Each structure stands twice: as structure tokens, then as C-alpha cells.
Length: 265
Image (cartoon, rainbow, N blue to C red; front, side):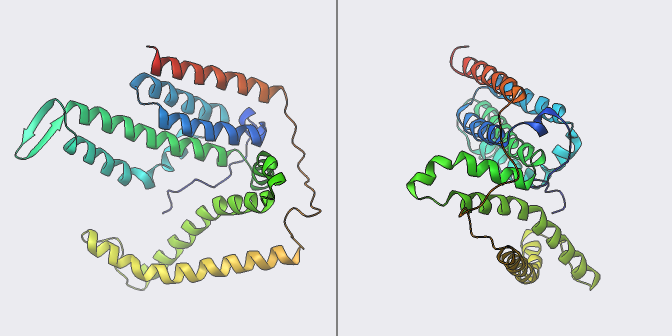
């Protein structure tokens, strides 16, 4: 649980930290869509280089980024096993009724890379954007929907709170697990079924704690007279600058190169 880092903000002075949140949100969403489209080795390799370079520019340690990927390792391994052992194609090795195929290995590698890049791209946005600025950015991006009577401010606030609650809930889960382990509870040992059963007693106090935190947050917002977007102003005024233009141009070049590698070469 303590390995989950998405939703946390890491202070910094990099160009990515200073970039307009609307641009970062748009690039993150477009990158996720692009990663779901790309399925060639070279295009995904270019995407990996792009994401790693973005982390290096932001000044965020790659070790910290890898730490944030640990919670999804089991999902990646499960996906790889499914594709390696149950994909049809050119056989490489056969053991009884299990056949490992060339196509299965390639597919598992591509899907695993795609999952890791998707999570990394989303994490980088939260690492480099404060909760306040992120909320304003989401609200501004959704501004056209306001004319359709969509409560954009409320939706933006909910998304921001949900992202920031992830590390809070994980920290709370860690505290509950340590408290129960100190009282002699056997957590995280045995087979898969036994481990699953050992987590059941954790869920009840976790839900109670979550509802209490949500109630405290609601009271705090109500005491500050929060009523959505009605008559509300923001201390963060967003303006696009030269840094944003440079980032946008670099991103366009990346997308063009990825599509060329995907559909031309």
C-alpha cells in the first residue's frame, strides 16, 4: 500500500511544474488515448522514451516513479501470463497442454508496457500539479460544458478530491494494518485465499475512517461557504506562455513521430 504514489504532489521548479495545468491535463489525456491506439514496438518504445524524458525534465526521481508502479506489478504479471500461455500463434515451447507462442510473448510485452506507461503518464501530472491548480485547470477545460448546464466546477472539485484521496486512503490502510499486526493479527501471510480473508477485518475500519474524513471535508467546505461555481473566483489565473507553446510543439512532434512509426514504417 505504501508504494502507491499517484495523487501526490512533489514541489519543484521545472518547466513541467510551471506549465499550464490545462495543457498538462490535455496532454495526459491525449497520451493515454494514443497509448491505447499504438501497438507497434517502435512507437511504444518512443512513447517510453518520451515519458522517461518528461520525468527527467521534471526533476522527479525515476526510482520514485518506479516505486509508484509497484502496486500494479501483479496486474502486469497476470496479464503477461494470460497472453503468454493462452495466445495462439507460432509455438516456441510446449509443456503438456501449455504452449508458449511468439505472438503471445510479443503481445504480453506490448500490453505490459502500455499499462506501465498509462500509469506513469497519469502520475506525472499529479506529481507536478498542486491540487488547487489542478482543480482550476479541469474546470477551465470543461468550461464549454457549462453552457449546457453541466456543473463543471463541482465535477472538477470531485475529480481533484478523488485524486488526492488515493494516497490518503493508502496511508490510512497502512496505519490500520500496522495497528492490527501489533495486536497479533496475521496479515499478508499464507496462500492467496488466506491473505484475502486477512484483509476483510481491515475494510470495516477503513470504510468508517473514509466516511469520517469525507464528512470532515464536507463540514470544512460548508463552513467556508462553498457553493460550487456560483459567484466563485480563483486565486490562480491561468495564462498560456512561451513555455507552454514550446511544450505543445514538442508534444506535436512526438505524436507525429509515433503515428509515423505506427502506420508508415
